[in-house]
Amino acid sequence: MHVSFGAVLLAAPLVQTLILIGFIPGALGTLEAGWFGALTLLGVDKAEIGIFLVVLRILGEAALISVTIIGSLYYFINKNIAKPTVAINT
Image (cartoon, rainbow, N blue to C red; front, side, top):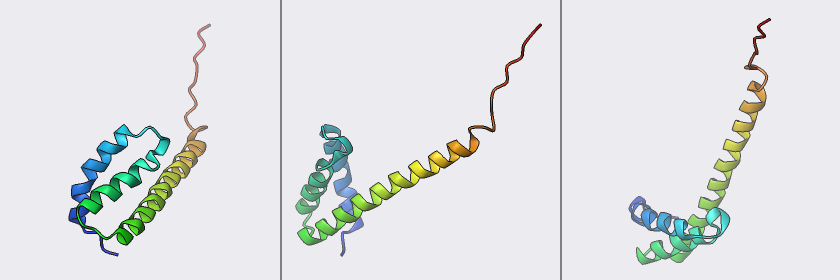
C-alpha cells in the first residue's frame, strides 16, 4: 500500500471541511467519503484508498480508547489524594 504523504497533505483540509458539515456523530461516513473523494481526485488507486480508510478508522478508535483509559485511570488514582479541607472557625 502506498498513499503518499503529499496526497494526504493535500486532501486533509478538504476532508476536515467536510467533517464540519457532517451531521452524523463521529463523522461516520462523511470522513470516509471525504478521504475517498479527495484521494480519488489525486489519482490514488481505489483499493489503496480502501485499505487506508480501514487503517485510519482503526487507529483513530484505538487512540480514542487509549486516551479514555488513561484519563479514567488518572482520575481514579488521584481522586482521593487532593481532597479539599474546610476550616471551621469557632
